[in-house]
Length: 165
Image (cartoon, rainbow, N blue to C red; front, side, top):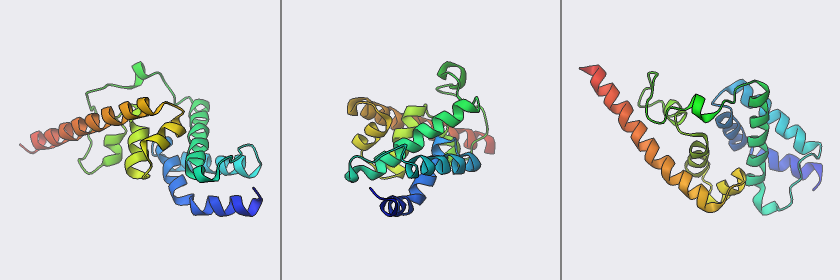
C-alpha cells in the first residue's frame, strides 16, 4: 500500500481513531493525541502493515489500543485489577449525564467491548479481533458489560435521588 492510500485511510478514520484513542487513554485528551500521533507514525513508517483492506478500522483500532497500553505502562498508570477496581461501589460523585464517568467504572475489557459496539458501531466479532480474544469471550464481556452498566446507572440515579432528599 502506498503512502497516499495510507494517508487517505488515516484521514477518513481520524475522528473515530481520536475518539478511540481517548477512550483507551481513560478519556485524557493530551495522552490520546500523543497515542494517535505515535500510531500514525508507526503506520507511516511501515512498522504496522495492513494485510486485509476490508479490515481497516479493526487494524487501526488495534494499533491504537496497543500503543495506548504501552504509553500507560510507561506512565505507570496500569495497575492490577484487584488494586484498581471495585466492582460495585462508585466512590466519587458521578452525574447521571456524565456517561464517561460511569463507563470508567466498568472493567477494562467490558468497557472496551461496550464502547466499540455502541459508540464505534462495530460488531462483537470486530471487537474480538481488536482485543485478540475469541468471539465467545467478547460476547461474555459485552453481556456482562451491559448488565454492569445498567447497574451503575441505576446506582447513580439512586445516589442522585437520595441526595435530593
